[in-house]
Amino acid sequence: VSGLLAARVLANHFERVTVIERDSFPTEVPDHRKGTPQSHHQHVLLVRGRQIFEQLFPGFDAELATFGAPLADYTHDCLLHSSAGPVPQFVSGLELRLCPRPTIDWVLLRRVRSNARVELREGMRVTGLVADATRSSVLGVRLDGPRGAKSELLADFVVDATGRGDKLPIWLSELDYPAPREQVIDAFLGYASRVYRKPENFAGSWKAIEIACRPPINPRAAGMWEVDASHWLLTLIGTARTYPPVSEAGFLEFARSLPSPSVYEAIRNAEPLSSIHGYRGTENRFRHYEELRRFPRNLAVMGDGFCAFNPIYGQGMTVAAMSALELDKLLARRLKNGQLATVGPRLHRRIAALVQPAWLLAITEDMRWPTTEGASRGLLTRGACWYVDRLTQLATTSPRAVDAFLSVANMVKPSYALFHPALLAQLTRAALPRFSTQARGS
Ligand SMILES: Cc1cc2nc3c(=O)[nH]c(=O)nc-3n(C[C@H](O)[C@H](O)[C@H](O)COP(=O)(O)OP(=O)(O)OC[C@H]3O[C@@H](n4cnc5c(N)ncnc54)[C@H](O)[C@@H]3O)c2cc1C
Image 1 (spheres, protein in one colour):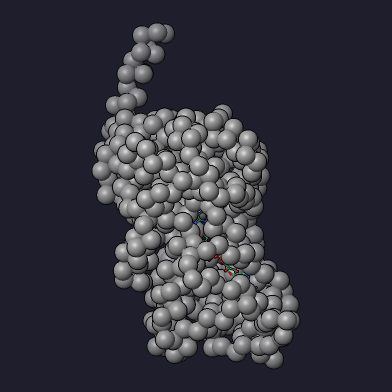
Image 2: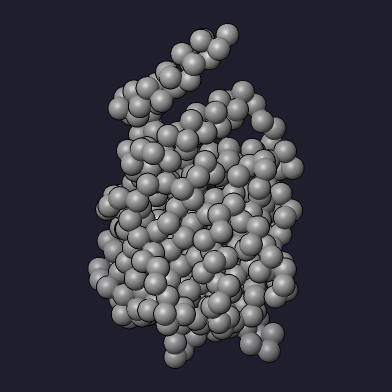
């Protein structure tokens, strides 16, 4: 995703953009491929991400709709079970397009492919960087092609978007550059997903069900989506090493033990159409490239290779899209001034700043689990959790609280929207009767 988004904006500034991909892309219909094993699992494109995709590729959303992907108002068409219980249903205007990840990749690919400035080279693996004699500038990349054929591709500017398994720290060390400081916070979360045929006589009116886990009591969560008129995609999620099983019986039992029975009730009599796919390795990983004093010229890194999040919060593709916009803005300014060489470090500083809210949300929530490794629960985290708990409780009765919460989670409002005076007033009112009851009791 971040590679194709980067290609889209690079084509605004360069005559020729070459995308190197180790896999072969699907040719006939949207499909899974080896290089993106996460595609079997639910992928929400947050509201902010949806806006940016549309900005970069006008008509993107309509094209997703041609695959039957329904449009869902988050708070009206989805049954939301928060950690404090079910939340009220109302129209918020926070709209999601419910589709499988391969459909997003397919439309993205089709759009990028139709750009005359972009060439896609498939079945080629990047194995390292090509640098000048002083190793101060990157001149291109080294490639392994079909049947091990080795080659080099020279370029004015290289963007690394190779995802969670990114080897850039190793490639940098081969050129005697330091590796970035790495922060890893792991809540030991696993996914298991399966496609079902929607029963013909299904009478429910929802398009999605989202069930949150209840730390530290119940580590099980789930998301079930109608992905077209006749299919559901169910993703079961377990935190704190409660990995959802990929066996028939284990998968069903996990669904039965979710904090709400709604998903189990729906799938009990539905026909499974796919095998069950599992996924682990979901740690939050932040490589602090923005801190490096020395970094080669003409090189930048984006996407999961820079910062990857626990995927339960659905932030990766949206952050990739926001990063692509930053790259576009920087190139527009710096190319004019002949300062291409230093776009990388500047981009890294901007990405490091823009990922902060997403990063803090992910790690703060993950630190609710005593089994999470990589960070300790300081006063600030405990305070943030305390406040979010109050808000989550309020959200079981207050559409305003639900709206604030989801607007921040969908990155269309800044985090401080959670402290809006009207919300604070509601929280105070909600707390008052408890204080007076306690006072009477004592
Ligand atoms: C289980 C799971 C669920 C997720 N759910 C969501 C969600 O709901 N919403 C959301 O926004 N995000 C979600 N994400 C995150 C999302 O998948 C990523 O953030 C998103 O794909 C952007 O990542 P990327 O483009 O950096 O890497 P990827 O999408 O992983 O792409 C990397 C690409 O680089 C290629 N590649 C790798 N190495 C080389 C090489 N050496 N040479 C050539 N090509 C190479 C790979 O084949 C692949 O095509 C989820 C992630 C996981 C694991």
